[in-house]
Length: 189
Length: 158
Image 1 (tube, each protein chain N blue to C red):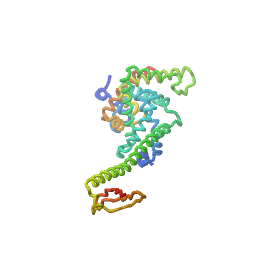
Image 2: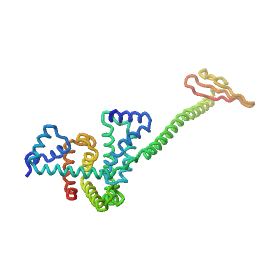
Image 3: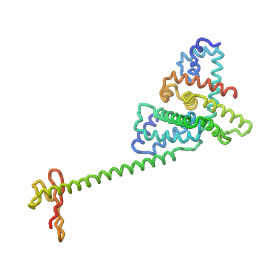
Image 4: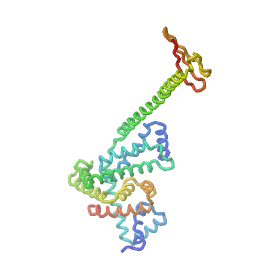
């Protein structure tokens, strides 16, 4: 069964009142939505909470889902808008909180690194710090575009639908995001 | 030194890297890469960035076997039961309202009819028919209903 049909069947079943069928959709997309949300707000705890909110909002709005769009594109739009809203609220609350969240996320126990040698682990952690710092230096739109492309393999057309912009804008956001990341990451590779 | 093809359109390298060019455009850009070290270097850098981002994404995963479903399902069930309670409450209210309103209208009508002297003659208006009769040692309760609008009155006789 194709993903598209499978998703539509699950959505239809949920609309008929079978809450348990929503589980299939949650478990299918939770990892991908979580990464996209993390990519926007750069905080694991908040990303996890927000991912739940994305699915709850999607469930409450299932009746508004038009079958002519792909379910995941619709779901990503909800994730993108919720994460962006949350990010702006956080930024408005405390201007410096953003950097604090990166710091707290980068604690020694944060990365489940599979590297056992301490020197390698330290190097890897330093690189991850640089990548996260680099991602943090991008605009929200550039970061979302790069995350959707690099972490989730979306096409320009899909990204443009999720972010509600033209494919030309997507291309431009990706270009400037990569140019900035180049400066931040390449010297450490 | 950048050539015309990339100087005029910097984002081409991204489109090529992401596989967004048509086969013809892609072939043309591939030829361009052979003579443009800057674009070739950009491509290599993009590959390194992708690799690093992919490594980071693996570290950031929620974790194998972790499901957000239990928390989501519990929130959905809570919302569902609150909605159900609200809906039951609405139904009960709808059931109660006509009975309460009917009683009030009946009482008001009975008072009007009583004070207007309609029952002084111990005769009912012709549009009323008796639907029940309850007797006690002191009183006789006769329940009448208006055939046209269902208005109910209780006539108490000593």
